[in-house]
Length: 323
Image (cartoon, rainbow, N blue to C red; front, side, top):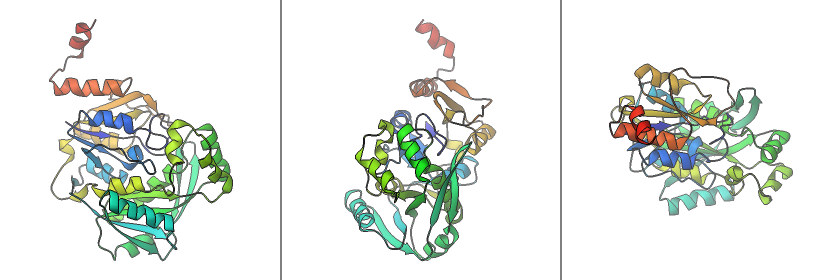
């Protein structure tokens, strides 16, 4: 049983809208899956990435193309990672890179970008997004290197008032949206796994947040020095685009939040892959899917998957048995 688990970035999902706080739900789904595919937003949490061994960590644009049947995926034993940073690379970033080399066993090389990668976060009525500058120059420079996956560490400009409001009041994570924009732009051209980690906000009042207690689901955002260990762990064995390997025909389910509808859903509907919509996890969007399997929570999603694994197609039979 192969599953795809999504929580789109920057939409204020009640589970998975902060920093890796969808990981327990994903681990539950992965426990009843042979292969559990997800994207960085679900499991990235600064220095923490608790994805299970059967996880396939797939960047969003690659996941879209996979579900649309345009590409196949193959999981390697390990990837050569290139880390792209703005000049000059900071000592803490070098330490984080070496920590991953000596704990995960990653093969990582870094490159300082000749043209600054600038990312500016913006908020709209449909969630967090942003603009990315210098990404074409980044692609041109990194294309001179041999690597299997690209990690990027760079600042994200977020208005001070927006950052403080998020930490004090919760809501939509303002950093995630522009990260998704950047990774999709770059991965679409490179055709390689890409993930981004933000470097600290320079405003002192925002920096002081790390010395205060925050909402539990945000805690991973304030315990890290440079936020990139989760990216190294994810990219270390991230699937590569391949002419042979796992295809969309091998996928059994898509698990999605409520009020969430986009390319993955349309692709699954087109090929007839069941979509399990979890009502307890809701986004800020005002969209309603049409033909989905509805469950109240992730526990029920697991039950639904297990029942079909057991060949039980009549849900009424289970309901009557426990009546």
